[in-house]
Length: 375
Ligand SMILES: CC(=O)SCCNC(=O)CCNC(=O)[C@H](O)C(C)(C)COP(=O)(O)OP(=O)(O)OC[C@H]1O[C@@H](n2cnc3c(N)ncnc32)[C@H](O)[C@@H]1OP(=O)(O)O
Ligand SMILES: O=C([O-])CC(=O)C(=O)O
Image 1: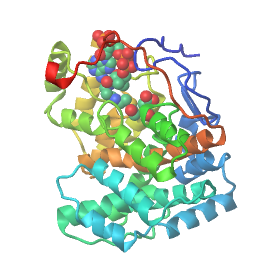
Image 2: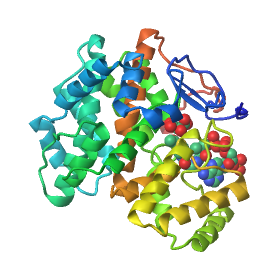
Image 3: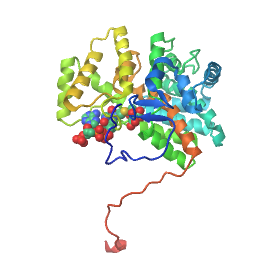
Image 4: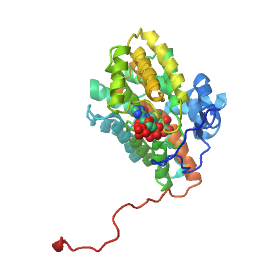
């Protein structure tokens, strides 16, 4: 049984802020479970759509339920013309997380959640539409192309790759996307999910909760770390160079993106899984630099600081080997984590009290107002 991390101090660390039946993080040897299932087993044998169903609908689907769910999602992929027009107006140098935020929010104007009874349908719509929101904007703004937003790919990961590259993805790439989307799907009260729950606790609509969560995931201390990790890895030309650079960053007290975790103590169970797939992809493309550089940073961080790679670190090289532009890394996280966010919104709504903690006041003592002429 792994020891739980000692949790205390700022950032609400270690404080129970609510209940969930969705996942456990760092509580048992398994490390991470979704509704009781070890994430490593899900990543090895399940489809992402199965995991989405598990999180959103409560149990793993039967074969018939999964087939119906995949069909439902496939039919919801296309984007309304008005949303395409909005995406076309977003400049090429915009951050794709801002594009996701706008895309989600604008769809909420076109197809609002009028009643909480629509929550599942609205989530399924977002799940189906997110890959096209990202890639329609990307390919229009970067290549001047108005792409088709539908494809005949069964899986969400395959659909995303197809739209991005304009061709059928390889089986290996579809598999890795599937694994990646499963690994990123849910993680208890992380910052973005907590954001979604706070928003839900005011009885706001689903699009607002998800838009808020996207904003929260964007930062480099959370989902943005996979992009930041890629930018760092790319700077090094060899393992020796990487060791030297990492030691320098540690000496300057820089944060090394993709390392450490608020809850896990000595490993992130998602890391070994994505690292394995990144290695397979490295072999496929004949990489002799990025993967060895990543391993050298990994080793140095452990030796120097006992800090371990989190889910984001080897995702960077894995996505890169599949030809995914770095700026799209965190939006892929959105396509996956939407499932966890929405499931938490449902949970919050089902047993709600507005989330409103207290603050310890550290300002000046009460004092008398001084009229402006006398200041
Ligand atoms: C999917 C995800 O969102 S996973 C997280 C992705 N984020 C990153 O990879 C960003 C880099 N990592 C970090 O900034 C942090 O480890 C976080 C935000 C993930 C967790 O933060 P905390 O819970 O505050 O970390 P923790 O309490 O374990 O930090 C302990 C010490 O290690 C240091 N540390 C933690 N992570 C790192 C890092 N990546 N690089 C350098 N030092 C680090 C902290 O600065 C702290 O040092 P101090 O005691 O001298 O202040
Ligand atoms: O739990 C966290 O703080 C961050 C994280 O790993 C995730 O959201 O996947």
